[in-house]
Length: 328
Image 1 (cartoon, helix red, strand yellow):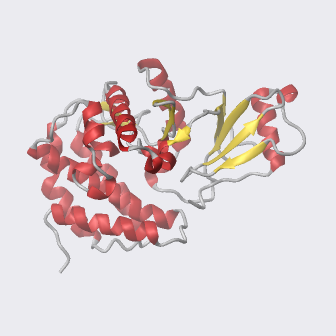
Image 2 (image 1 turned 90 degrees about the vertical axis):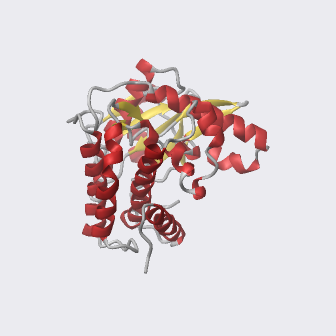
Image 3 (image 1 turned 30 degrees about the vertical axis):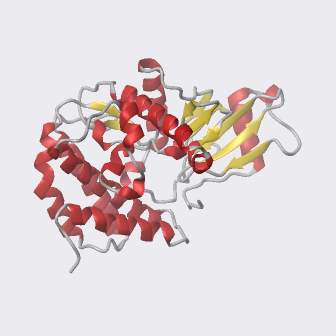
């Protein structure tokens, strides 16, 4: 999908990036050595073939003049930190970082190289797979997500801090940031913003049950899963991670919103029992937050197709109804 956050660069700048990362002897010449990967929704990503045949992926953060959501600021730094954490504390397959440049000298933004992963994007091939094959992949995603969530933090909040001992304070702050982003750009939610705040306050006590910070991926949907030969080949795009409640992972969203698909196989792989009453309330709040993001980000990304906005608004209305609000 097209987005104004994609920071495309000329072949000359891309070649300069390759030279800085891998040296002049490996820098490609001529034509046909670079192509844009089209699945990303935020950063631009390129597949690059070096002179010696090595294939890499280059990710470039959004241009500095493009306004992003509050939680997306510094996203590439979050991804690099998350990759370090996952490599150190888990066995889940993630890319290594070949080279990262946060100087912003060549294109005004952060960027990094990683090896190209030879695999299929699960969001692309999933609809074509046999039901049993897709279910097996979903179970693997659930197991991998559980391993990620097994990493304990010292406080709730951003990977780099500052942290807080209260998940309620952290999560309500996360939602308030998104609401403020929407108000700043006057995004029509279909709801008064203060009504959303009231709903969050009414159910916020459910958040107090969460007492131990865990590493949360948050964005582990099918589009960030690369598969090959019946196994997960790599998990990609780790820029939205933080320490929080594992139940906020998107794999659990289908427990409340059918639009996110049947969560049975994910939960089986994760090893999670049916949600308790309080967990269901929390998960509805997490769906509320997710749908606010998905509605508001369409404006920030300059989408011209109204489909994602309309779909997200419909899901937002559904979760508001589950939380006790219906449109008059």
